[in-house]
Image 1 (cartoon, rainbow, N blue to C red):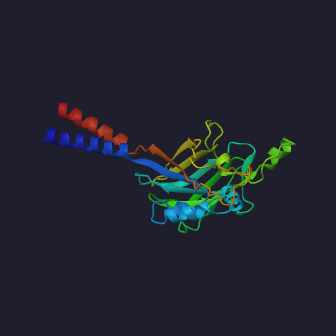
Image 2 (image 1 turned 90 degrees about the vertical axis):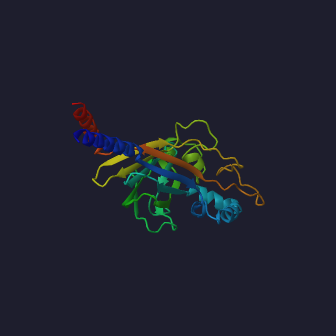
Image 3 (image 1 turned 135 degrees about the horizontal axis):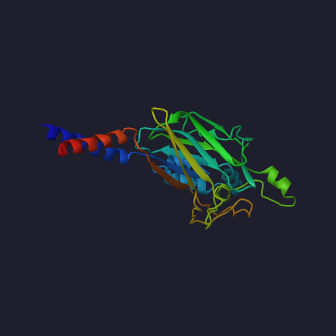
Length: 262
């Protein structure tokens, strides 16, 4: 009987440990000039939205690429909420701005049920901080808009340098079709467990490829009768989450095996 009990304890502990190893905090991240495209992705309306967005005016597209949308979905299999998201700008000539949106991140109209607050510890120079007031639950999605400006301190320190006043997010956060990610934005997500413990993970944006024609803000307008590419850049992030009980269960398994050997 004791041998059977020991075997059951060992099997339970090992099975639980295996389940814990599969529990991850993960997320999906998307960047686009179009909130409507983000909402329509994977639905029957996607083709219609792409067609509509592709035929906007060149001037309108410049403004949109200067104030892009960010989408984040908590895809965690661990029962933890995403409590904070941060994003950096590594290129010193650009920064985040709250002048037009009146905040560093403005909640999109397509995710009204999520409460966010935004800030920047260095007044937008390098870091955007978005806090999810009630936590972004697993399977929840949030979309918010940000604004990019030319850094006035950089211009003051570099007299004579001319920078297009409406930066394109594809050249600020990364270098579209580039090959050097050393000055690309870094994303950091923080998850909070029920017991209040937190864990964070970071990753650098790659130089995403864009297969359609690339029109960068400040390099000339496209022809009015030319359709512009409708791009969305996506990234996933994942980190394994060790459960607090894992160590205890492992000791139980070892104890059970030792007890059985006796």
